[in-house]
Amino acid sequence: MIELRAFEETDIPRLLGWVPDARFLLQWAGPQYKFPLDASQLLQTLTTTRGDRPSCFMFKALRKVEGDVVGHIELMKINYDEGTAQLGRVLIGSPQRRGHGLGREMVESALSYAFHRLSLNMVSLKVFDFNAQALACYRSLGFTEYERLPLARTFGEEHWTLIMMKLDRTTWAERQRGEEPHASDAGKPNR
Image (cartoon, rainbow, N blue to C red; front, side):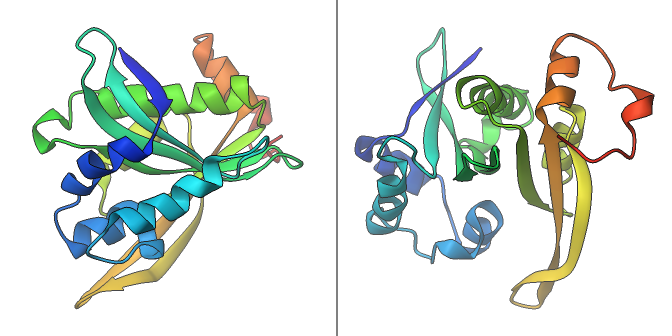
């Protein structure tokens, strides 16, 4: 089981150790951060997590029983008036721990926080089309694609297509109860 806790300044060295190169950084965090990632860049993001209505929540993910930190995840670009946020910077730190369901648990915990604690209506995310494992995870949780941006990012000679996905609170709640979203809801705008 995964538990999310607030990311703190003391967590920065661990996160820095999980980002091995510029390509990985761009895939994980987008263009906001520059390689080499350093503490000052993360501290700048950490300032957005403060206040009564922060625009970002940064989390470290711990395995409940073992107590070790295994990942990082963020809810960003929170718009309380519209009830929306973007899920991002999802990372299981150790490559050996990837592919064992920890990422899914981490995303589920972040979604629960977004929909229950923050009472948001919609969570979106961006993922590159070559990240098949992440795409499968997000789809299994109910995220649906709503836009595809070819050539959204370039790294060296590579051109990356960005897929934008979203999940609304109603669909999330139905899936949590073990229900499939109603067929009559297909094609309706998300709430």
